[in-house]
Image (cartoon, rainbow, N blue to C red; front, side):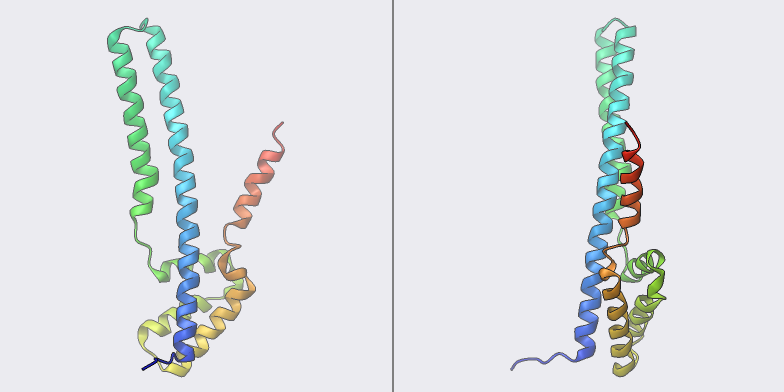
Length: 162
């Protein structure tokens, strides 16, 4: 027996799928930032280790100490800047709020639709709020532009460096 989906469920599913895509991009940005920080911290530790080894004339203890410091820096930075941020669970409401903070034109449409869905309000109201949220989200490319200003700012900052 085929199941029929009501328009409210279809709009809810589409809204949740959009939030999952935004969450994935958010986590990807966190991963890329974390990897950049880990690489930077490891390079700093390598430079400090090589300086210390040279000052201590490459003694066995200096080499061993430099290795330990570099590995600790790598593992510590990876844990702090990659693993911890990615291990956090982010609710749909938080993702919706994140999108609305970066796209003021949504004017709390996403959060309202999620609250109506969770409150178990009437199907008509839930459907109307979900459809309105989807229409507004479509106008802002379903949240795809959220990180765009940051990326453009960083790109323009690099273009001035010669």
